[in-house]
Every structure is written in structure tokens, then in C-alpha cells.
Length: 486
Image (tube, helix red, strand yellow):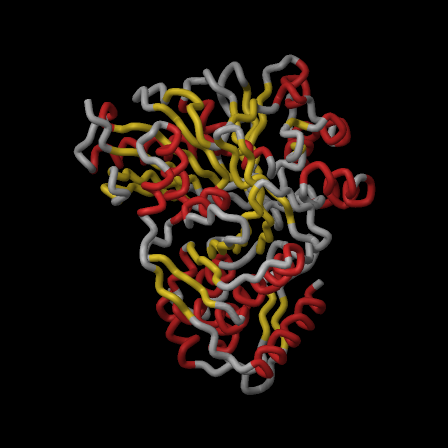
């Protein structure tokens, strides 16, 4: 039977989606389902991994049915996932031994503070990362130390631990394949991104036995068969690397920013592994056809989550439409909002920083605070991009934007102003799923590279208009506000 379609599973921090694409890269159907956000203690964040897996299966079934399609018509499945989030499960039963520890969780701050003193250079040299609870190593260590029976299961070779992609692959293949891809393994703080293996020195420091970790496989290539349907699983990629590919940032120097729960800025550095002198990250973008492509990355922890806070916690606006209206109708007032709700990410890496609003006067009201919150997303992104420009001596002329928060015209205009470069927003801003689809499609010859490049859509371009003097003043005030939040 003619293979008409391809499915991308986009497993995110708050929900899971399955999107069915046809050969023309048109979205034929899409199904999404949210999962619970679990906050056991202040600073802790967890997910029910089984709920996520069942949601993924339900979304795949729903997308196929919604398109009046059948499994025989589907060429492959591509998976993209929230990175760094850790699941540990019993290999014999296939059941998680505890809730998944989410990338935002700060419960392992003490472990990482010790690692930052003991082995910062080792972590930097081998993994391209910095010691922070954001990454997976300290989460796995915490599980082994704190979940009853975890260490015993590991000693009996009955424990599996990995990022969300490895759990989905395990479950979807009926336990036949325990694997992760290079882009996800490079986010664990346990993987040598130059030698491409789990690193013995780091495993020893974090007391993690290698037998509990998955096999590492190419980002694009056959991984295993979906047991329920027989459809090949042909790609797996961390969400931000998938978005980089989906934005067709295929050349060294190309840069994108995904405005999601956080902001994730990646610059393709090609086959050149750049271990940055600044506090940016080096990461594997993807591995395919025997070649590894690297990227520089800066991760901003709170972007869309800060906007959610305005609505759900502070009650300063009822929805994103009202937020956009407020921003467009409110003048810049010298109020600065540092949304360090879960610490500061790149380039600061201050896990104990907390949110701060400064510059208020008797004239300050909720509208000024709302606008300052949205502006903070652009300022945080500039912090990262300025470091990238310095590290690579690259002349960045355009930033490619995607993710939910980039729907805000105000934010895109302000981002262009603050960066003093153009910002391009494509018609299809859901580039994470698209990247997973492209990677899977290439693996099974559903598409070739020339074909996926032909799918590049016309983008709306936002041009900078702010005067240099105003830009310098505003950015200087922002930097002083960040210092106060540390």
C-alpha cells in the first residue's frame, strides 16, 4: 500500500501531540492531550510518565482516526520530547518506580553545587554543559539515593533510567528497544559529546551504573517498530534540536529561538564542536548518516511560564489577547521584571536566583508589570545571543522564531528592537513537531533533503526600529535588575 503519511509525536512539558503529515508537508490531522503538573514541594516538579505514554498512544490513535487513515498508510513515526526530564522504571514490569523528575525541578541543587566545586572542568570539557539541576545526571543520582529499592534494582540489572524519549521508545516497542538518540544523551551531563559515549569518570562521580542507561542511536534512522501498529519509529530528537531542524537551520551560523515554557536559543555550529568560554552550552544538534552536527545553546528557564504566571497566579490579565493589548497600549515605564521563578539559566546559571520586579513608582500599575514581564523574554534572549555572537564571531543578521509565545506581535517587535536584527516568524510556528517529521521522513526516504528545503514557508519579518541611545539605556537597566535578582 502507498505510504501517504508520516506521524510526529511532540511530547512537551505540558502536553503531548500527534500530528499527521502528508507528502506535501501539510497537517492532515492533529490531536493533543495535556498531562498533570505535579509540584510535591516548592521548587520540585514532576510528571506521571505512564500518563504521558498513554496520552502519546491515544494521540497517535486519534490522529490516524481523525484522518480516516490506517497504519499501513503511515511511513514512520518521529518522536521529539521535553529534554532532561528523567524517568526510571523496572525493566521487568515496565512500570516507573517514581514520578518523572522534570527539567524545571530544582530538588537536586545541592548535588549540583557540589559538582560545580568538585568537577566543573570535567563536566565542561566532556559534556559542553555546566553543573545545574536542569540536566539529567543529578536527577538519576537523586533517584538512586532516595527512591526505595532503586539501587537494588540497578544492582540486579532490572532498572532503566533515561529521558522521556527512551521511556516512550521502550513502551512503544513493547520493551524490545531501550534507546535514546545523541541529541538527548548530550543533555544528561553524563555523555562525552566528542567521543560519543557514556563517560566513565562522570558515571563514577554521580554513582550511576552504565547498565541502567539506554543505548545511544542516531537521531534519524530506524530505532524499532511500534508494537501496536507496526509503524517504524525512525527518529528521536530533543525538542530544541528538533525545532532547529524544523526551522531548516541546517548551516553553521543559523540561529533560532523557541519561545515556549522557556526560551531555547540554538546556533548551528556545523561539525565544529565549540566549547564556549562564556556560560553557554555546547550540545549535539543531531547525528545522522554517520555525521554529528553541533550547536551552541542558551536556555532561559522562564518565558511562556512567566506569561502563564501573569494569568493563573497573579491575575493581572485574563488571557494572552489581553496581555498583547496591554503591551501595545502601555508605554515603557522603567519597570523591569526578572522572572527567575526557578533560577536563572544561561548565561547566568544561578539556581538560587528568584523573581524580582524593580523600578516601580507610585505611577506603576498592573499594566506596567504585565509589559515588563513580556519584555523580559526579549531581554533574556538578548543575554544569550550576545554571548553566541562573541563566541563565534558570527554576524547574526536574522533570528528565526517559533513556539507559542512568538504569536505576540509586540514581543517579536520588541525582540527585533533589543537585538537590533530582524526576527522571522514562519507561518507554521510549530517547528518542533515538524523537525521530528523531517528527521523521520529522511530516514525512510519519505522525503529527501531537497524536498524538505522546498517546504520552507514565507515568514513574517519584524525589523528593529529603536534608537541606539534608548536601546543602550534599557538594556543597561535590565542588566542591573538581573544583578539584583541573583
